[in-house]
Amino acid sequence: MYGFEALTFNIHGGYLEAIVRGYRSGLLTAADYNNLCQCETLDDIKMHLSATEYGSYLQNEPSPLHTTTIVEKCTLKLVDEYKHMLAQATEPLSTFLEYITYGHMIDNVVLIVTGTLHERDVQELLEKCHPLGMFDSIATLAVAQNMRELYRLVLVDTPLAPYFSECITSEELRNDQSALPYRITKLGGATAEIMSDLLAFEADRRAVNITINSIGTELTRDDRRKLYSNFGLLYPYGHEELAICEDIDQVRGAMEKYPPYQSIFSKLSYGESQMLDKAFYEEEVKRLCLAFEQQFHYGVFFAYMRLREQEIRNLMWISECVAQNQKSRVHDSVVFIF
Image (cartoon, rainbow, N blue to C red; front, side, top):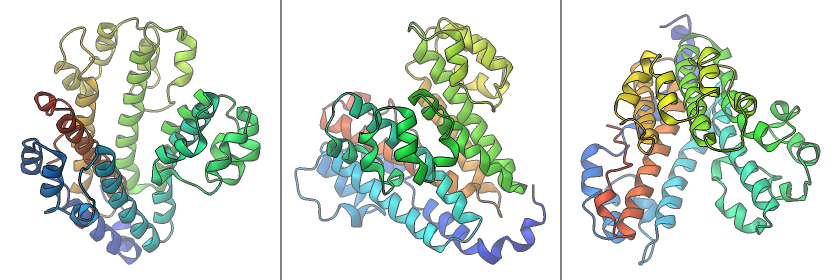
């Protein structure tokens, strides 16, 4: 639904919206995935990708290829596209684009803090960090002895500082990842309308994943509630039901009360949770594609970044199946975007 933003959006945002819609047209199609799933070796995957927008990033890679190389080069393309958009953006779009990377920043912080606690090499951990979530002082995270010190010595000088001043534990730090982008909706108009739906779905998916992953663990119901976000379709009554679930069927019963999620759980057999992630990813892709059906909003930038990340996950899964000679499972986790 358009407000007055339709009158002025193209002054500063029209060029970049055209750019991101052009990027979207370069996403792999179902035909591309079907061809990739027929590949016998990683070199075959490279040869097929050479005819796509990934070609220039993989053309100089020598054989034998590794899955990590393919993923790194595909991620590098995403990073280059993001940096180009950020360099061209003006306020408030530039801030919006920065918000998109905060989730990766938090993942990197948690990765390094957790790895340091287990005495892992810092350089090894840095290599595993997502490039969109890097910041200048990330290497110094290892010097912190607790979460208060982590904030005082490191996070206070990063873009994450305003959101983590009250965080004391790593669990609270990770939980803020889902709540952080909610501030995007303050932009109003079509951006708020579309992003509210996408972020609410993300919060609900996290709530379900937290519930399922904590079943059979020492996590109490109260601790589980603290990990849920304070927005989304499930908030607050759905969260109360999820907090007391003891198995996957109880989670299913709680979720089927909400029509948008009935179709997701209808794809699963009772007692089955293995395919839940794929069902959620398919629903997310559907919602992200719908964001491109409207104009004059910033949601297309968020949607494109998520769609490209899903594409990279698809390529990683296909490459791993080919490398490990498990082609019978290659369709298990591939989510078609078009």
